[in-house]
Image (tube, rainbow, N blue to C red):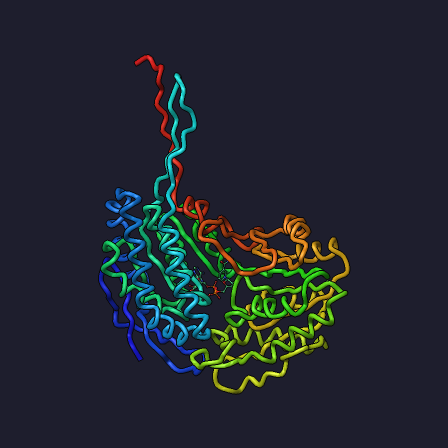
Length: 473
Ligand code: NAD
């Protein structure tokens, strides 16, 4: 077991109080991190504020270089990082590798984004120009499903925009983030990036801190609402990336064998603990029987187990609370007599938070396992007859994060996509986010956006400067 320290003002520090972090595959402690409160937060925020006075004056090129240094540090240490990530998060090694390399790639790509000045008016009367100025000190709060990707998703645009940041990982998955902190300690100027750990109770202290100017949060919709409330005291800027209940719509012309495996992974990657996982699969009645059988057959080839073991496709649920929540949803489906194609037979007494691959056969639309975000290895398959009907069913959700349409007729796919009430829709693929395209939720899936120029702008204020050219002074 290793102790991991926090990064505050360019130094790795601890306060002598520790939180233990469990491996969800073994329920054994894998490491400890500092348990921080107001005092440590105050020093991290003060360091970020001091650093901001210099960092905001740096050029885009200088900031780009620092961010590329972060990308390189992650990439060079990817082997160590992905193994550590699996040990705290549970995801299989191959998926942990994807996250680590994906985070390095995201940092490198987003380092190239720049916010140019915009000319609003340029004539004999006046010159009016909009520039983007950094908001200041950012508080970043991230969840446990993609700890490194989410941390980079907050740190990088903050730095690129000229802000400094205090980041709080989830208490369930802080280890890899603190190891990254150690690796980038001498890459970033002291105080520009601070990473502190603590229980959930540290979150509201960040949200309400009087010297933090903006909150960027990824997590559940319930917590997102609390963040909005907490940040309202001094009208902090906020970006919220929240829950989803994404629908995948499979039209009758889709090739059953070709889409079965892709649909499977769109739901079961990271044991279903993905905000943009397909959580409701609507299949046209003409191909429903064939496709549901093909998905269930493929599921039988996938091994559920410890993510550090070769051959594992689906790891454990990351933490006990979520594990019990998913089991409760499955129990509810059993109690209601819904039909299972696989799963539903869990003995919850063993070691590790394992849930079997669970596929439901056409449960009703109002079943809890359909209407709620499962965030686990669960896939409800539902039959539909007409496109109008399925669009209405897909949109019948408080969430609006993403969705997918599977069809050979891509024009038809786009026509359907344009009627879906979500921030992203994929035609014939899933979970593909571009560093250059905005990612954000409609309805209760979020507020604002991350990624791309739109995401970067959220770390800035517009400032308009006008020069009167024909002034009588
Ligand atoms: P969560 O909301 O419980 O916790 C997220 C973070 O918020 C953690 O760091 C936690 O310590 C902190 N927190 C908890 N209470 C807080 C409070 N009152 N004030 C401030 N911070 C607080 O979410 P989770 O269970 O860690 O993650 C799962 C959820 O995240 C799912 O709903 C999932 O869909 C969502 N998610 C969304 C996206 C996205 O980009 N839209 C990505 C990943 C996960």
